[in-house]
Amino acid sequence: MTSKPAGSDELQALRELSATLGTDRLRTQGAGGNTSIKRDGILWIKASGTWLSDALARDIMTPVRLDPLLKAIAGGDPRAATAVDFVDSSLNPAGLRPSIETSVHAIIPAPVVVHIHCVHTIALAIRRDGEGIARERLRGLANVACVFAPYRKPGLPLALAIRERLTKSANVFVLANHGLIVAGETVEEVADRIARVCDAFAAPARLGPRADLQALASAVEGTGYRLPHDSAAHALALDPKSLAIASRGSLYPDHVVFLGPGLAKGTVVNGRLEAPRSDPPPPMLALPGVGVALHRSASKNAEAMALCLADVAARMPEEAGLRVLTSAEERELMNWEAESYRQSLADGDGDAKPVPP
Image (cartoon, rainbow, N blue to C red):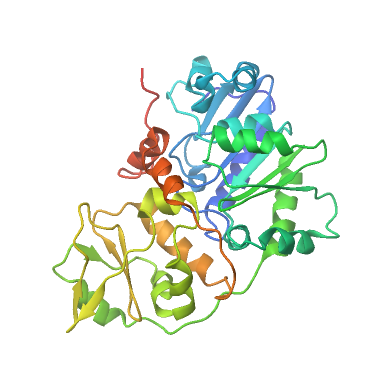
């Protein structure tokens, strides 16, 4: 474990909140989301590739020297993009690499910052009219000052977009095609604000038919595909409205990173899966009217994102106008070293790897 920083009681409270958020699939999924706390010139932030759900079981926090990082961001120093050069190695014996969103946490001045991929927020943040709906739902919420940020590549580009819109009172940030950031003075304050904002954004999920799991298992037997561990993922293909929404394009970054761009589809013919030919094979296949299949090489993060896509699509009206990621935005995510690193961690057990020398 790392050495205890000043304010370790608050850090423990942040770990507890992180674990709570990480075990709620409607709040965040897999290695998505990150939390931080600023103490004595150090930004303690979740390490890249680690899971919030593991916050109480293992060390997931990385110490980053805040002032040098802020100067690097202000000066256009390219090292700010990864923040690796600003890690305090004396407090980081495990050699953890900071989250790709470290610059985002750094530029928000509040002591506690939490970024989650809240399903209810994403279902608004991908809509062209989502900002107006969100503002209406937040109206009247005490101590909530919301900023809306346009889609930018996660990390430094997003941090710069947020910086342009920062106000002294801002403590909630809705990120187009991405998720939610909530900030505050204490962990308790942030936890309360998250609960109230997410409740305001909440929408019921459409209910669809149940998958015929026995028939699905028979269809994928002997192929490179398997069934998801959580049968709720099948709703994506069983509900025609959800399938139509997901077929429009990539809705948020983690979908592209872990499932690939867009939505790959397969069919079941004479009781057997017929998958599209591609190299590499799609991590997930939607089988219209039948269910979902995951490639046997799919990581735990890919599994989590398959379920997330079903959860988001089920809360979207079919007629809603969507803003999907462009092909250029998809390419920059797929060719991004920081995301390649995070994705590589998913092939193991979720532990973070040391910062490269």
